[in-house]
Amino acid sequence: MASQREVIDFSALEAELQTAVESDRKYQRENDTKLRAVSQGVPYNQFRDLVLTSHLKPLDPKDKQGGPWKQPWNPVAPGNH
Image (cartoon, rainbow, N blue to C red; front, top):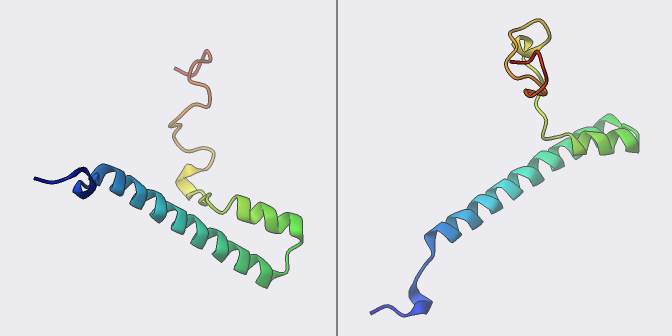
């Protein structure tokens, strides 16, 4: 018979692992951005903006204006149905 100390909560363990993995990805992404910004010699305001927006991805050519409209900004507004 297993005691309470021997029971492993795998869902909590998996959630903790996912949080740690995402935290590591964020650290690596921001650190890479910092190193790139320092090597470019950007001013502090631009450095800060680059780090804060490091999670954003560039648009594909198909995502630019003139392509098919996929998601309206305000789906409740008239004319966006």
